Amino acid sequence: MSAPTPRTHRGRPPRTTRRELEVIAMRLFAEHGFDEITVERIAAEAGVSERTFFRYFPSKAEVLWDQFDNEVQDLRAAFAAVPDDEPMMAAVRRIVVAANRYRAEDIPELRTRMRLLSAVPALSAGAGAHYDAWERAVGEFAARRLGTGPDELVPLAVGRTTLAAARAAYDAWIDRGDADLTVYLDRALRALERGFAPDVPAGAGQPAGLDRTGNGV
Image (cartoon, rainbow, N blue to C red; front, side, top):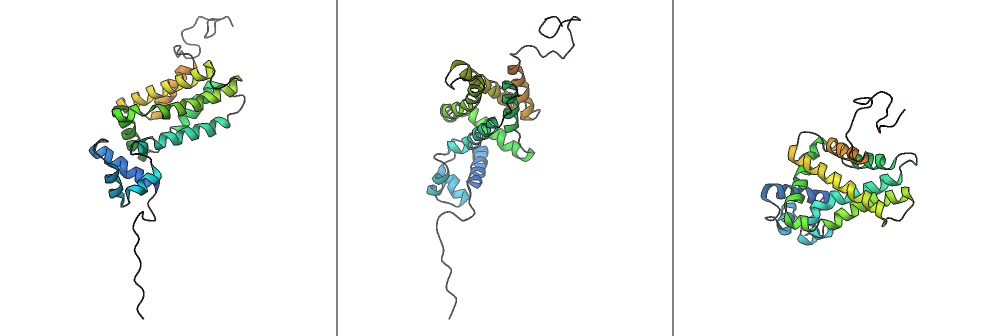
């Protein structure tokens, strides 16, 4: 008796993953532009149905926000483990910088992602919920440190100013492309940490007998 003919199955190939769909979508966005690419095109390139795509992402825009949303979860986990004796804003800087360390081979995709998020109106319009979650992760940590609720003024201010400083670093990194993203983030967040006062090296440009605040020592 001859062997039975293997059955074929339509739909998602067993090895198709969320990350594989993301990589395909990012390549298509980079090559053709975000607005020119449809979910149907992404699914076809991946060899899956549109229904399979929507199991992973509610829209093509969410492909671009996926890594950003993962960063929010990383921030929350890291803030939960901050030692009690680490200064609040030093911890914020350390954790945000650490969450944005990327392998060299991932940098081109990251640049593409950040350029699209800042340049495509449809993506900018939907950014609010994602940025709100990011700044709330920072603000909730600040609230725990300050012993207040996360909706109090100062925790809100900490979350929002940290996000603003980080976005400035992202923009500078995209425009210049001359250093690692973490260099820009560390510089911006250090400035925020010291209240944007000039970064004067210890002992430089100060009269003898004064500390950096101008008080006697």
